[in-house]
Image 1 (cartoon, helix red, strand yellow):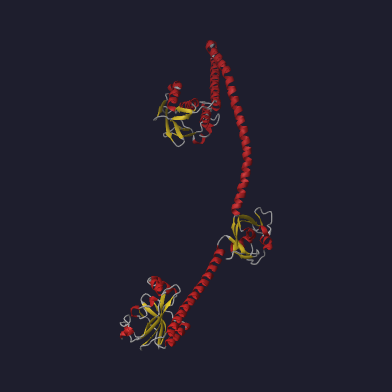
Image 2 (cartoon, rainbow, N blue to C red):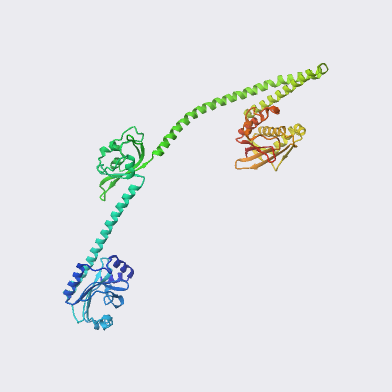
Length: 556
């Protein structure tokens, strides 16, 4: 054992840590320790005895017999010489012992000790704390019985140390438990989560502030489970069925072990309803026996109200969606019939109107000399009216074709399309003095070449038609890439379109200036239809310096 203690006590840091755990240094010894030291002096038949603890730098005397207790430097201590071996030290004459004869308490510098004996104080885990020491200025010898009794008394001292430490630890544990209990009580009263607990029979034991506020009642410890539904107004989530005791989440947990996200409603007269989401768990003691259950309740009243509002809105939307779907179906059918009607009527009007225009021209040329100025004016007016009607019919036919002609998506080189469009518009370009230019290169997009040609021809024709009288007509086409595909810009310096009419002009027969009689209000509607069939968009903006810029968003 001595070797084991010696090996262990070579770790001075660990030894000192154990020593300080006892909290005995510089503390007065109690009556029991003083009695042990007195008995030790009597057994050894010496006038002086002491109880020493040795820390890093000093020897601390807890209690003494035959002289006043005092601390001394560790280097002067006789007990420090061999106490870490954990063995009994017996020196009849210190002046003859090689380890002690030069000690200042032996040499005469501090004292004239001759006889010295010490029993080690060793902790239960083998660390040397100090000694139970006896000495005299006379040469003496202890017999075996005296040595054994001193060892017994040393063990008693260590036992008293242990008892004192355990008592202190128990007191600290009790204080910790009390602090913990107060802390838990404070937390329970502070948090906005309702907490309730019951014993194994379902009687309430804990009911915190949030739970009391939501249930509109004071703390009711000991309330049996059969009284809970009536006392607290507990209903199911819909508020239509009062819960039975066995249906309460807290009581269910005793039987089932765990309950997750169970919903119930607190419903009491003259109090607002409270929706709760509950999670409960069964409680066990150290032996596994059921001792009760605890439930955590979250107030979800606002969330559930929102959910009810959203569900009602969903039902309303579903109802309106069905009505809207029916209306869209009817509108689509009506539009198709109107488009078919417009196409059929327009087509049927082409030949009669061409004939009427021909007859009017023949009358004008064949009977010009027989007509007076008034008749000539009337015939000219009739011809212009027929020509306007022919243009209107052509526009209607173009609109119908834009909606019903087969769409064959394929790569379309817009540069080539513009070349063909400008060839078709040569006459109006020359008569209007318009200049059409392309900034950069126009891209290749995916679409129907015939419809895209119709789209760009309408836009350029409109730009020439609504040119400004104050400056030469200039039209610039350009393109910008984007994540969707391409934005095609058709910018002119014409009379422009007021901002408040830029949405309206895409409607059928809508015109910015009906009095000007420059169009029929169908061209931009046709453009909108073509772009829509390409899953694109068309918008109107300003051109810097005056005019209109049409922006076409088309897929790449």
